[in-house]
Amino acid sequence: MRNRRTAAIVTGFVTVAIIVGQLATSAGATNGPLARGSLTGTWSGTYRGAYHGSFTLHWTQSKSRLTGTIKLSSNVGRTNITGTVQGRTIRFGTVGNTNAITYSGSVSGRSMSGTYKAGGAGGTWSAHKT
Image 1 (cartoon, rainbow, N blue to C red):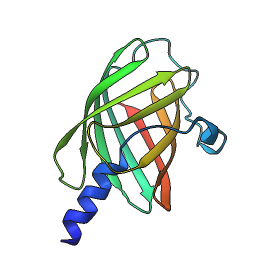
Image 2 (spheres, helix red, strand yellow; image 1 turned 90 degrees about the vertical axis):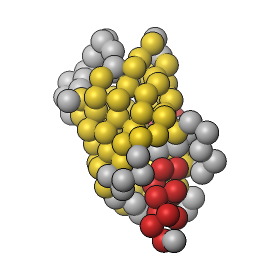
Image 3 (cartoon, rainbow, N blue to C red; image 1 turned 135 degrees about the vertical axis):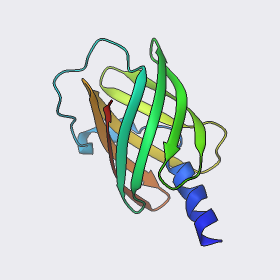
């Protein structure tokens, strides 16, 4: 039961929106200025804090819109995700998930990082394009 609950929380972890006001607390990505190119492709990352593990994102970008899938290390399977990117700010989350979890983050070149909140818990996340 605990594994199912944890899996549901972790799946919800990658839900919904970035809070723009939290960008000041986001960890800055370190691989140079934001590429004007696409975020389309595969990204590998980790999350730490209240929940921890690794993930793989497969993005397709069309203008500021992102669609794709995420695979979490918790063996939850692939989950559909959507998001947006505006300048250095990125938002993404699972499609149709009811858990209220938010990410705030920034993108720079082939790296992105930020913070998340899940209820009263939270932590950090980071990813790089592979």
